[in-house]
Image: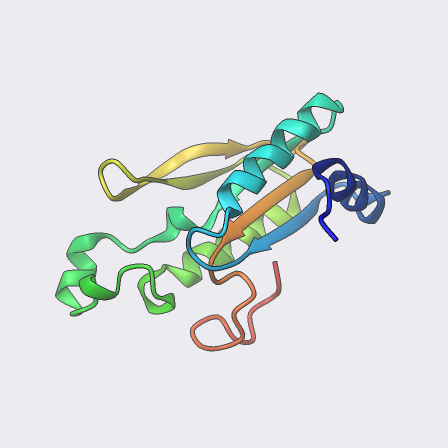
Length: 147
């Protein structure tokens, strides 16, 4: 059975009923369409008059200089090459929803994360967090609060 975009949006809105802030995790392997789905959901929420924003985990790639220093540049994109603590700190601030939170976004053309590139306003209700490892149950993220 293939779910429609409308059915996914309806399901999210049903689960988010009564919530000031609702975080949706969109996880999967590289190239699976996570970003495409997150962007489509964002557009559909806007069409329905709902506030949403995409919070991409890719913005938390460690810089190539750090990866090279640690011998991890060839593994860029593996779990240990992300700033997991930074991501969790941002998710914690976003979950509170009491002030604007600026989040990084990854620029693929330059292969770098741009700090404070996307604002998440306090009145944004639906947060579409997307990334390869959002639901990974191993270090460095194990035991962290779920998205």
